[in-house]
Amino acid sequence: MDTLKGRDLLSLADLSADELHELLQLAAQMKAGKVDLKCNKVLGLLFYKASTRTRVSFSVAMYQLGGQVIDLNPNVTQVSRGEPLVDTARVLDRYLDILAVRTFEQKDLQLFADYAKIPVINALSDTEHPCQVLADLLTVQECFGSIKGVTLAYLGDGNNMANSLLLGCAMAGMNVRIATPAEYEPDAAIVEQASAIAGDRSEVTVTNDPIVAANGACVLYTDVWASMGQEDSANDRIPIFQPYQVNQKLLSIADNHAIVLHCLPAHRGEEITDEVIEGSQSMVWDQAENRMHAQKALLASLLGAGN
Image (cartoon, rainbow, N blue to C red):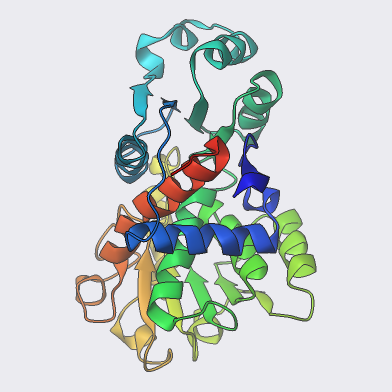
């Protein structure tokens, strides 16, 4: 995908609907072994938050492309001693070919993108998690043959996952329903943006009623009720979020062929039950694998990898 070469991916809104579709097709082809792209490049991972799937999937994807990975642990670099991000960004630009940043503030990602000429990828921020949604859409595409017209219901906290699912589903032509407790809704500006993207092609719904969201849905999706940095409020949130738990009762009102997704890690017994995550309708492990395939396609596209 030459159109993505050299660009940043800070938000799914950085892609057009056609580019999103092409990226998913490339990921599917690479996963099936029909396309083999290579690039002798270096990826830097600058992660201010803990990570398992994002760190490992990016690393394996880059190695499979023939490149190398440098894990830039903030605790052992000068950023931990207060080096300005603008200085770090300009230096890393001279060493690396591409940089994935996992951080808190979206504005820090934008700063890296402004001061580094190399592509910068949002590997998670408090506002968005675009790489996860690429894998989610790839999984839905595999399960249903097409993503257009599929209805996804997300239940839980209106966090970065809810925000990115709103944008990704709207761009893909999916119906998206977000059900959260009052005062835990997703970012209002992103809801408005997703609605504008969807237009009259698909539906964007934000509700406080989990039953309304789950009824007839093809995909039930959830995430932890307290994201990284919110651990102190985790116990207080449990009674508030309990009605949004993805359990067998909620799954029974979804479409008969519905699948269940969770971006992981999961707090079993809280946002999802053991019965559901280990059940026959769970596609959570395929979803986790698809992080690698989707990100390999993304890396190949941003770096202009060739055969």
